[in-house]
Every structure is written in structure tokens, then in C-alpha cells.
Length: 322
Image 1 (spheres, rainbow, N blue to C red):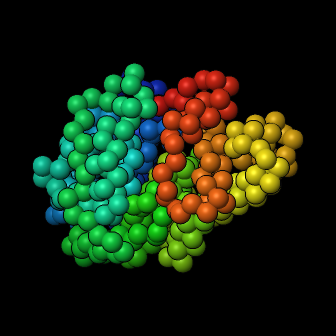
Image 2 (cartoon, rainbow, N blue to C red):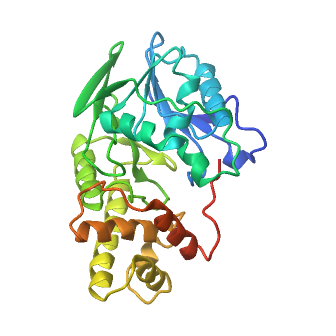
């Protein structure tokens, strides 16, 4: 692998936080936005030199512009296709910068959720300058699996079921043994499942393992190998066990998360250093919903979930880093 600072790096960023590009296989690049926290997602592209497919965009107009400059600076043509791994704005807000010359592809639920959510990041972080965002949903959708050919490159789009969201897409390159997981996988960050499913995320990890990829491009955080699945699985199983125990004792998700964070409950120490640990309470909300018999992806009351994360974060607002 080779790496370099991306042309068009985001203005006023310290060098350690600038986006960078890594060549992970011939014709395949990952675009990493450190440190992978809220609104700092990864993207990437596949190109044979004639056609290009872009995986995900970015949360702000200026970050999407920097992504476009990095892509073009790598010597490949502008994308003919943009694939969204799910509907969250950090992965889709920049679609409009590419959509005039490209077909935007996503799972059918990704299109539905993108349209329903609208200017979703603006609602959560009204103080952030996201730029001139024109919400652009996938125009080409699929249900279970879709294969796109970029020259000799086979790009398989797989829906793993409800996991991080209801409309996740895994981008699998079997010839290069590279997988873009979207936010099913966070590397060095806390998983986030309130809009998806705990059990579904575990199932999705099994499907990812079965692909046998050597290189994993997570939705957030640095590149990884397949061992990253083990960390995500241990965390999710910890959340499941914590939810079962706390719910039996009549604790709310916030009470359970506070108790775990205080060190009174065994198990949390392994995950305490993961970024955005306040997501624990959001994940407990989803675990409780599943224990109550609600179906995967059944909408939670997001203001309550968000408010509990702020409470767990010592009353500090959850910060968008874009």
C-alpha cells in the first residue's frame, strides 16, 4: 500500500487530520478522513483508467470538493457511478457534486431513507457550515445484489440485511480481495446501530467474514484487515449482554450506560478507548427495542437517543468534526 496527502486537502486542518489517499490494490484507492469521528467518513474509488466508480461522498461541500480533487489528482476520470453504502449524510451529502455526470446507486431503502431524512445533518448540527447541499438520493436502486463492471473490474454490491441502517450496501471486489463495509465496521471507533439492528449487525459481520477479504475499508477509521470484525463483534455482544442484564433489573438505557462507564460493570474496559464512547447508550436503546420485540430498523425516537448521548457525554453536545 502507498499513501499520500490528498490533493485539495481540507483547509485549515492540521497535517495529522488531513484526508489522505491509500492505494489498496491496482486501480483501487481508499480515501481516509482522520480521525474517523462524527461526520469524518471514508470513501474510495475503483477505476480502470476509462471508467470510475466512487464509493460514498462526504458531509460538507468543501470536503466533497476535496474528495473530488483527490480523485481527479490520482489520474482517473470523474466517476460514472457513485455508490452510497447507506443514507447518512456524511456518506451522501456530497452526491450532488458528482451526480450531474454520474449515476448514484444504492439499496432501495437507502434511497427511501435519504429522501425521508432530507437535510439530516443540518437538523443535528445547525451550527455547522455544510455548504450548498442539494440532497441527492440514489437514482438506481437494487434489492439484494447488483454487479457493476468497471472495465475488467467486478464490483459486487451486496445488501447484508438491516445492520447499521435498513439500507446498507457492502462493496466487494473479489478479484482484489478488498471490501468497503460502510458503517457496519468502525475501526478505532464505537459502532453505532440505533437506526439498524444489533442482531442484524452480527449477521452482517458473518457475511463479511465469508467474503474472505484481505483488505477492509471501514466506514470510519484507518484501513484494517479482517481481524477488525472480531473487535466489532465483541463490542456488539457486550452491548447485548449488558442490555439483557440491565433491562431485567429495570434500568433505563442511560442508567445502564452510566453504570457501565463508571466501572461498576465488568466488560466495558476493553471498549473504553474507542472514540465516541457515548454511542453506548444509543446502542442500548436499539438493544432494548429488539428485546421488546420490535423489528430491526423500527424507528427510535432520535431526539431522546441523542439527548441520552449528550447526558452520557457529561452534558456536552455531540460534536460534528467536519
